[in-house]
Image: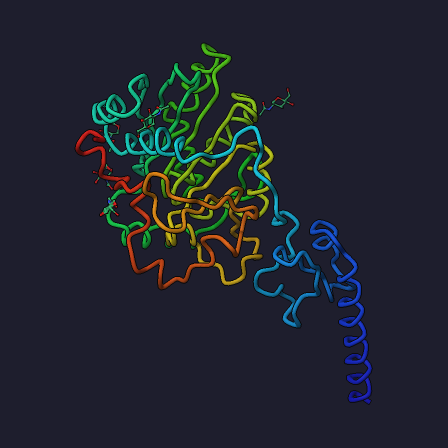
Length: 352
Ligand SMILES: *[C@@H]1O[C@H](CO)[C@@H](O)[C@H](O)[C@H]1NC(C)=O
Ligand SMILES: *[C@@H]1O[C@H](CO)[C@@H](O)[C@H](O)[C@H]1NC(C)=O
Ligand SMILES: *[C@@H]1O[C@H](CO)[C@@H](O)[C@H](O)[C@H]1NC(C)=O
Ligand SMILES: *[C@@H]1O[C@H](CO)[C@@H](O)[C@H](O)[C@H]1NC(C)=O
Ligand SMILES: *[C@@H]1O[C@H](CO)[C@@H](O)[C@H](O)[C@H]1NC(C)=O
C-alpha cells in the first residue's frame, strides 16, 4: 500500500517537474520568469541572464549557478542621469574616505591637499569607535558625509566583520533588516550630531546635493545613512549619490530593495576579489538573508588611473567579483588598496 502511494507521489512529482520545465521555458523575460513559483512550491523558475532563457530549478529547488530566481536580482541598468566615472571615484570618493580616517586636523590637511574647496564641518565618533566626517563642497553644490572603516590590518578587519555578520539582523526603519552592529554604529554616529547637523546644513543650503561615501564597515554605514537621510526627508532621492568601496553585505533582500528605492544613484566599488565584499560568505547567491544592493562597479585588474571596470547589472552578479575564488580573495590585500592607494593610512602623510 505505502509503496503504491510512494509510486503515485513519485509519478505526480515527475509530472510536476515536467510541467515546470515546460512552463518555465515559456517565459521570455526575467520578471515573469522569476515570479513564476510553480505549483505547490515545486518547479519555480530561474532566469539565466547570459542566455536570456527561463529554466526550472534544479531538483534541489535552487537555481543553477549563473541564474537567479529572485526578481530583484534581474538585470537592471544604472540610471542614465548619474553614471559612475573613475574620475569621480578617484577625485572625490577616495579623498573624502581617506580623510575620515584622521582626527579633525588630519582630515582637514588631507582634504586641503586633495579637494581644496572642501570645508570640513565636523568629525563624529561613537562608543563603537565608528567615525565620520561632514563637509561642504561649494564648487559641486553639495554636502559630503564620509565614513571610515575599522582600523587595523585586513586580517583583523575580516575577522571582526565576520563576527559582526554572524550577529542578528534588526529592522531598519526605511525597510528590511540590517546587521545589528551596522545599525548600532549608524545610530551612534547619527545621534552623536551627524543627523541634526546634516539637517541644519541642508536647511541652510536647500539646493545642495548630498554625497555619501565610505569604506568597509564605513561603506555599510554610508549605505544606511544615505537611505535614512532620504527616508527622513532631509534630501530628495535624486539629489543623493552613494559611492562605497569594499562594502560587505549590509542587510537582507528587503533592505536592498528599500535602499534602491530611496537611493537610485548608488555604486559599490569592488577591487578585484576584495574578500570583505563577499561577507557574509554566500554559497547560493539567491539566499535572501544577506543581499547586496545595486550597482557593483567591478575593477577586475587593478585600480590604476585609466583602469577598466565593469558596471554590473545584477545586485548579486555571478559575472562580476563573485566570479573570483575565495583563494584569490585571500591571496592579496585587495581590501585596503583602492585607487592604488592605501585607503586607511594615506591620511598619515596628508593624502599626498
Ligand atoms: C581630478 O584629478 C586629476 C588628477 O588626479 C586632476 O588632474 C583633475 O583636475 C581633477 N579633476 C577635478 C574635477 O578635480
Ligand atoms: C572622538 O571624539 C572625541 C571628542 O569628540 C575626540 O576627543 C576623540 O579624539 C575622538 N576619537 C577618535 C578616535 O577619533
Ligand atoms: C579607535 O580608532 C582610532 C583611530 O582609528 C584608533 O587609533 C584606536 O586604536 C581605536 N580604538 C579602539 C578601542 O579600537
Ligand atoms: C516624508 O515626507 C512624506 C511626504 O511629505 C511623508 O508622507 C512622510 O511621512 C515623511 N517621512 C518622515 C519620516 O517624516
Ligand atoms: C600602485 O601601483 C604600483 C604599480 O602597479 C605598485 O607597484 C604599487 O605597489 C601600488 N601601490 C599601492 C598602494 O597599491
